Image (cartoon, rainbow, N blue to C red; front, side, top):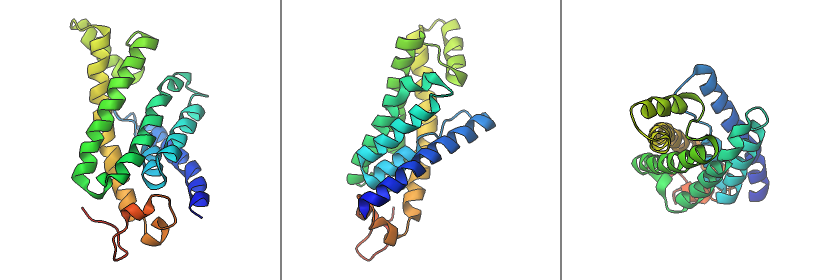
Length: 196
């Protein structure tokens, strides 16, 4: 039963990533919110299903935006990390979840900026690329400019992303959680979800 529900949640996680990412693009927000599904599935079902959600998300988005393929490793890491952090109880506390958002942002911005430098010379697309360009005009190297702009953007994105995941996890009833591979991590002994 747990495997069947995991298989059911993987396409839902992909859809959540895609829909949230598209809403952000349409509204021209300075964040991404495109890994909510990856992190939620990783927390509930384990790192491998979470990484699978991230991989498939990037593969699908790369059909219309091929550059996203280069950043697939980030979504894989986010899925694996979510599964690991769920086992450590991080998502039981709002403040721990927010701090974890900073960690996710440092990973995403740090590694993402290296990918941007290696493959695109430091100038990525969108807002981060524009900020990097401004920083380069101020005398920063492309590498440093990309690091600063992408760290800022990813931390700004991952804190609300993880807070949204926290509230999603809290909203799932215990009767559903017991059917998920890591769902029991979010259930109190009295049958209610763990609190902050």
